[in-house]
Length: 200
Image (cartoon, rainbow, N blue to C red; front, side, top):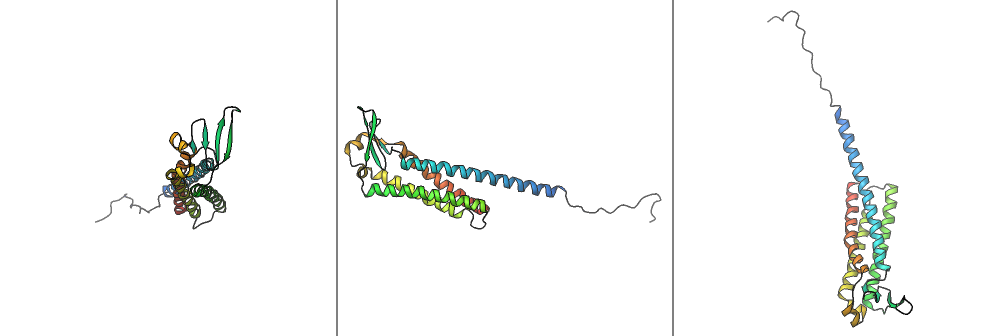
């Protein structure tokens, strides 16, 4: 067949890469960086808050309380004196169970402090590979130490307090509750640190 006169031959279509592809990759990369930055900020704030609560629970004077009359913590027993309108504190009578609680709570504070310093060091040096793994491990051990401490205080409080009247009339104080709150917070932050390591 003869070609019709005046009809131009069809142009060959060349494949060109989609220009939106680099933009999509850049967008996904930016989104991933934003999520990672937000997660790092969240973990840092969570760690600082947990460490502050843990320190208050360890050092403040309210693990066992008799209202506004008497407060007992891991270190002192304080009684309110109506005559002087002030709190009079004396060192608690120590025993093996109380010493165990003291040691475990201090260990928890130390481990959480070390993990935060290691986290800052790894964050600024931008180390790769085992990034944040050691930090997460320290947080896990800190959580287990705090958990063991509150369990011992819960089930051995009669041996720790050594006072029948305190046991009958008293109740757990806010520091005891804060110690329980620290346990899941420490474990959650430890899991987040391990998650950050995997994404790194």
